[in-house]
Length: 503
Image (cartoon, rainbow, N blue to C red; front, side, top):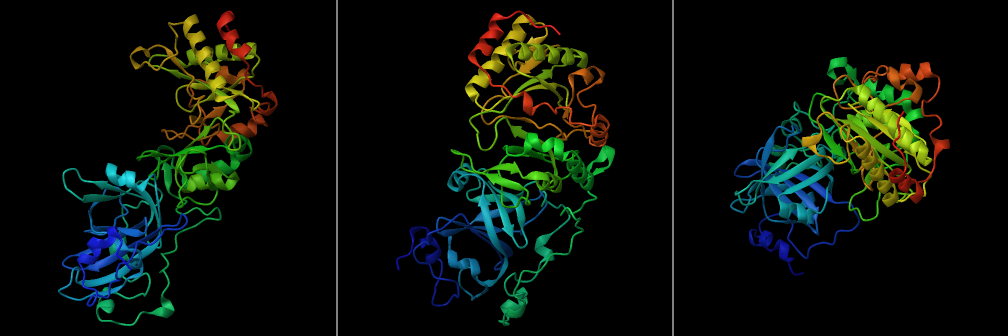
């Protein structure tokens, strides 16, 4: 069988009459979405680990000089080497001297990997991000090419729930994942421990009935609010929150080290996510998006340190038809919250005069979102046109108070009317979502008659929201579903023709 071009370099470096390594043939055809991942411990001239990732019928290979790390602060040199045949993924043994790579090879970890984006594009651009789902290594990693250093890369653990600054997997796990042998036992030719040739189980973590690990981990240090507290919060508000979140694409702000640590935005599903966070295929998108499946999905958000949930403005089964309109009132420096509340009432007046209902949401930050429920026949184009017309109307009526464009230089003392939440693929903070901000504030739906009593958009927190709902006795937006209407051309035109709205 002729050697595949991508394996010619591999073949030229080896004498297969002497080495037990697998000989190359034609590159295999990858089937399905499963891609093999292995990590081999290799005691050659220098002890190192070899990362191998299946791609287009071969194993992309990188020599990790100090072994893998779970600490995002650690950047491990990863030298790209020749592609290897897929059969190499199961190789364990000793390469005899003086052959290339002479020394002992242990199969240290194995599993699957999932790239984020196109693999070839990532390699060409110098950054390949991916998820590992092995027996010993799991979570998000990235390979980043070092500028001016040829094929020298850095292997970096990305910040996620699997990151661990204290763990050192390279020194903790010293036996083969396949045969339970040590490096010395492999070198001595000791028979594999076939009866025990199963992945070694990790030390048992403290796990709750919710499936939470490390439930006592503090996510909001200023309020000593833990992972378990967040899961309990989600369960308490689920009946009111899920109607706004379920069956919608969701993006998460994840803070593995809590609110005071580094956070990152995640909108795509990966195999490492816990059950309850499910994939959603979207036409034209290479990677699946995320959806939250019921209460389990909300609890899964707590498990991975997701401190914010942002939702698309359309349901998963009708992505081209928005089911809500969001007018985001974002105050600049020097704008009092009383002015933001006045602005929200003016937006309400315009919406109601046009024939739409309006519901106020304290954003949990500085501003207020005014949300209009739509009936499901409005297009994204019409929703954006209406929202833009409303923003321009406010700015035309009171240019000293409002901006319809995101002009940072002109923001001081004025409120930016952000209408761009109403475009396909845009998202807005979900009602009842926590915010990744000091004090653990919550995006809070309120009734118009109670708006005047709030002194800030972050007035309600994770601790006070359940008490608030209990005291109200009902969802403050209980009329949201019944109030759905669609936008018409006449409504948009009315924003240009009507008189200023004051409330």
